[in-house]
Image 1: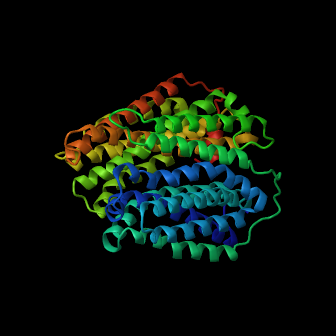
Image 2 (image 1 turned 90 degrees about the vertical axis):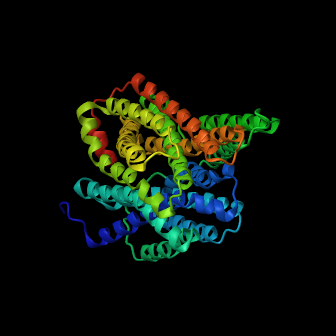
Image 3 (image 1 turned 135 degrees about the vertical axis):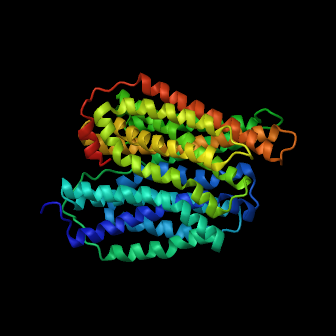
Length: 474
């Protein structure tokens, strides 16, 4: 058959690629619209982060369930279910009249995306022959995913300025419905059978509850500069529930997160680096959005401001495998985490009189390159010492850690920012807000330094990074 994709498979590829595109794009559009949403729904600064956190949290916790459900219920069916959930929750978000209903709809959106994306990837794996066709299909899938993140900032800015923030959620409805209708006409390969395994519901519930309680506890404001009893209690409960999750995973037959994989040092190191990296990446996107708003940027201008970050990330992911083959994942990780740390410290100097061209633009160009490269190195590093038959579950674990880093890290750093801002005399001043951003970004730089130290201490048994990168289609 060569590398030419059949018409039937091309139609399937279009459907699954655009399913991922609209879900990734939605995440970017919502970040751009945060200032408008805050004003419209009269949200407190400490609650605003939950618009991002609720989505990332449920996405992370249901990600591996999405993959397992695809095997049990059928990949096409699960993709349709995921898209349906995403469409319905988007409509609920568009109609939200208060912060609670919007945050709840975002959490359900995360579940829809977590079901859709693994199912979409599985459809590609099981319908495209190994080799040139499958590699080409995954290349297109990855490019449209990265493109969705970049396009989201522009689309979000245009729609928020012209039609209001609710239009971002309304947009998902017709697009999602068209994809669901298209799936009815898609023919998929059902000959590939996989081992049917039960879903680890106790593991899912315990990890979701533990992380939620932990994030909620961290987000609770301090009282007179000290932690209230309720906050301390929630943190203890959250840690206790996560300990219960580990115990469940140890004794369950089909664990959500097989603990034996954590004996592999390179996987553990990559998971922690990925967790830390997305802690500060999600946070600096969040703080930069609010910073641009304080500078008086419109939603479209905020979207345009983020464009260099997105474009450079797309470009670098295409060339990073070459550098990993030449220098190894470890060296790429060391260099990029060092650059990321410097970038966080550089951005921590933001002020009302800084120029975008001389201050933000160069930082976004460099961070776009380094974050994109370090993300690829994390994914490859997480599986390069893992048996080939366990690459799928190892990849699912590292992506779960990455997304959890985004939710938990943003909660920590947003709490740092609001605590520092609240301690300033004139809380409503720009200087008070920026002082919170400064401190949070310095802490974010500290996260990057920890990731750098872990990269320096990391070891790998595998020398064949090239084959791993090719298998993972990065």
